[in-house]
Length: 346
Ligand code: ADP
Ligand code: MG
Ligand code: MG
Image 1 (tube, rainbow, N blue to C red):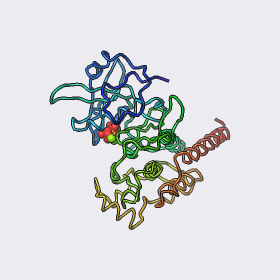
Image 2 (image 1 turned 135 degrees about the vertical axis):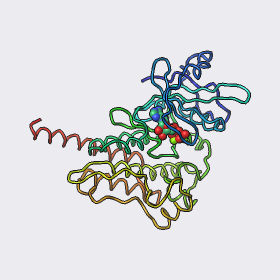
Image 3 (image 1 turned 180 degrees about the vertical axis):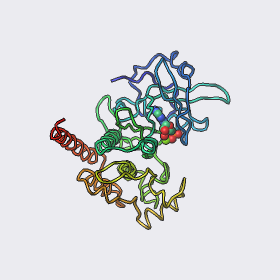
Image 4 (image 1 turned 180 degrees about the horizontal axis):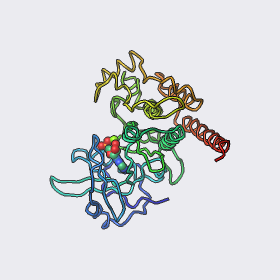
């Protein structure tokens, strides 16, 4: 596995949790990173900046350029990626981070691997349809990434547990090969069981309102309890599962056009009040299509999904449970697929 190439030049006090691997390139070289990258094509835009496809040292990379007002967000995302043991197949791979400029002008960039298929949201809206096998594989890989984030690795080097706090289909990328990686760690918070601290201590309302769990909407979430933060991630993950199921082709039925969760009731950028009325008061959840219940595999995914979007946060499945459930489905599906192909004489 590749080591991070560098550490950032800048790490404000209070945000540092552990130092990087220490194997970065010398500082004098780091200073040139932002200048070395050429920006080729804008590929995305979020709340904190713009993402470009660029070229760095003859490789395609993604360059996230933060708005000049978003220094804290850049610093937080950089410091999380720079931790030891942040390398995982299903977490966006970090290459470098840089800040440059003086006086009134600064540019903050984060350089990561580039994934031409873009976000899961874009992939689901553009891709004709998914097979059941593709669907399970995408979800299993995303669950692996999320479970990795949520899990603390004790030891040296170790990794704190992380709650993502902005899980949605736009913050999950699709890699060639049909697996996902979790991206956009700009709002993530760390937890270490050694000191029991959540760093930074997060505000209640943060993230994307459409994906807010009931306990965020009705202000009952205890932000001092790390488990509550991961339970809110699981609710949002369930909505992503629903979005993915929409595009799955099952025997004797057509996939449904892609749409965002709650799009029938909630326009662009809905208010917290509206989401609270839908999700808490009316206890509304995205509609489960009847044809999903015709296959044992998709019914099992539906059951897992509904357990994850329960109102009571402590009743939801954890990311580890979801990962195990999807792993079993993936293995059993592959076995049945091989048997099916053999029976067909392939
Ligand atoms: P923000 O924090 O501003 O929301 P993100 O990191 O979520 O920024 O990136 C915004 C969008 O840019 C994503 O939804 C995705 O479409 C695209 N994007 C981000 N990183 C990559 C990447 N490494 N490869 C390809 N597209 C990316
Ligand atoms: Mg984003
Ligand atoms: Mg972000």
